Length: 124
Image (tube, rainbow, N blue to C red; front, side):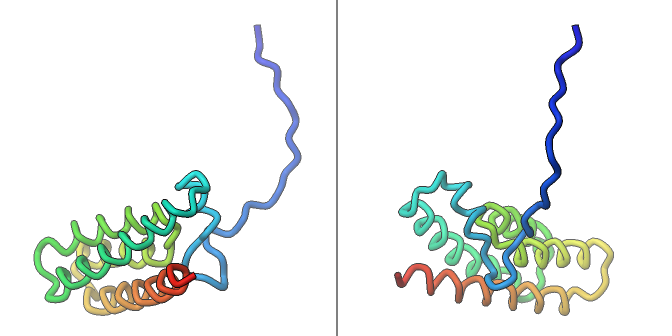
């Protein structure tokens, strides 16, 4: 027996991250099952973790790639896709041995932007 196939109309996918915010709040809501209190807790934890990881990476020690990977996963979990992309770029720069300071600067900038957005959300 063949499974029955149903026709689905095509619809455009939403952007991975909203243009006007460094956080995809819809993604965050899905990841926290719409629990606003949990969203705030996760955002606060991410902001603290990001500061610690950036500080640990400042001198670009040997473990920077692993730290960037950790930050990338956390960022994807909360919808901070620009941070995740910047962390992935740093991982690549480390792997190929090229442009690490520039990639790290871009990551720091992305983290600063998302931390500003998180601070504004947590004030409400």
